[in-house]
Length: 184
Image (cartoon, rainbow, N blue to C red; front, side):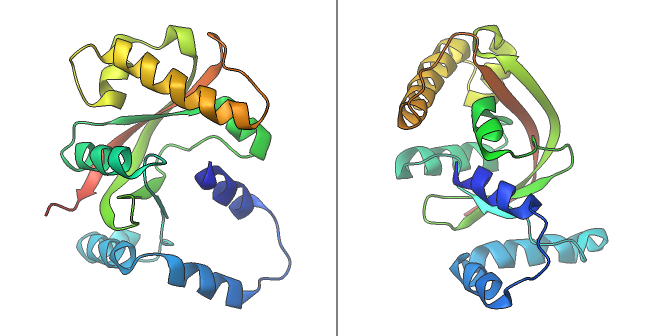
């Protein structure tokens, strides 16, 4: 959700920029994020003039964030799911193909750079086993695991907005490729 807030703030048109706020925000970003982007652009000079991508963990708790980051680094997790409701509420654009992001662990340490390759909006009850496998990073009952984990997560998140999950709620499915892993 924080990511969506950052995305929606990024897309606002502003006539004046308070550079002290930008510097303050950038100081909060772990130095490994800057270092990873620098390593990537040194090896891929065509991106040297691109801005530092957004960086974030893939979950809201330490165990899952670190586990998912490891699956991304190892190339097993190749998709992520969000509620369309969040984009609508934040008046934010859906993710765009080609967008790069830096995946961090729960503590904000850079683990990998990913690039979006495809975006679909699919009702919850129409998610396929193939997509669930890409999102969960496993081929052992991926759809069953995906539905259980995401229903619980979305239910908790929607509860905060006074909403309830529905079988036909729209899911934004982001397919991505890990283009720069950081292995320890």
